[in-house]
Image (cartoon, rainbow, N blue to C red; front, side, top):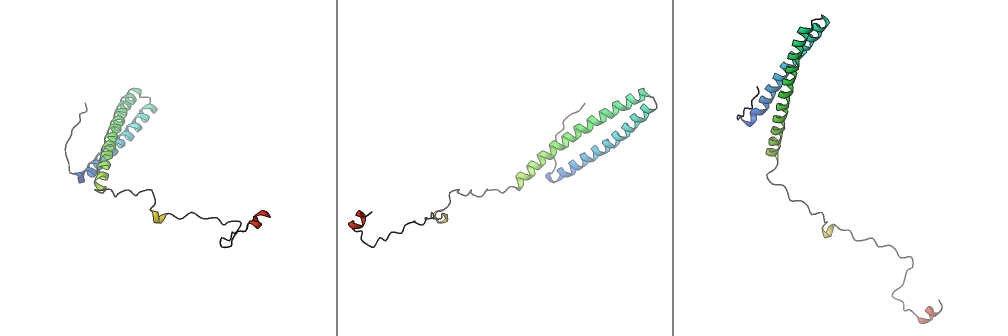
Length: 131
């Protein structure tokens, strides 16, 4: 039977706890490898009863490793979330206005006129009639 136990540890000790839990998983995986070799050996020798017993223990150990890794993963995710929230700055800098300041706006480019008009010379009606 599995039970959930809650206890408090110092924030700095979480990484050590996770490392210890991963070490336990590694030890269980060594047991899995040994059991797998035993299952294979028993099968090759025709001892199917022993093979089934070893396979049952193998499957239970693998299931335990899976549960342990899920716990480590959940704890690590929570730890990283807490760690990142501690590292965020207390105040966010104000967001910049996406509208450029007036001095940053370039004046529109004026295209050159094809025909130059002399605004200082008077227009004579005669010139207009000839056109």
